[in-house]
Amino acid sequence: VLDNWDKSVINLPFSDWGGVAGAAIRVPADADDSALERARQAVEDGMNAAMARSIEIADRAKLRG
Image: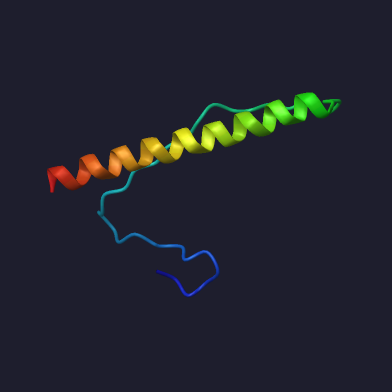
C-alpha cells in the first residue's frame, strides 16, 4: 500500500489481478435535470454492479487458492 490519500496498491510482477468495467454512460450536453438524475442513477447502479462483480471474482480466486 502506498502512503497516499487513496491507499493505492502496486501489485508485484506476475501476481493475479482482475478488472471490472461497465458500459459507457453517455449524457447529452443539453440534458435537463431529469436526464441528469437518470444518468446519475445509472452511474450509481453501474458502480454497485461492478463492485458486486469484483467481489465475486475475488471470492472465487480465494477459493482456488
